[in-house]
Image (cartoon, rainbow, N blue to C red; front, side, top):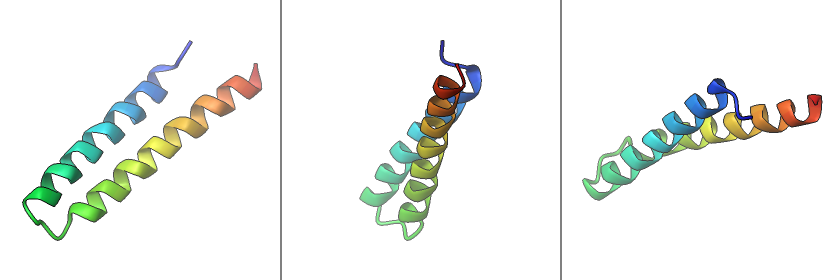
Length: 56
C-alpha cells in the first residue's frame, strides 16, 4: 500500500509541474524553478516508494 507521505509528495509535485507549465505559457522567468522543484518532489516520492518496497 502506498503511504500518505508518498501520495502527498507526488500530488504536490504534479501540482508544481502543472503550475510551471502554465507559467511557461505566460513567459514567467520563474517557471523553470517551479518545474524543477516539482521534479524534485516527484523524485522524493519515487525514492520513498522504492525504499518502502525494499524494506518489506
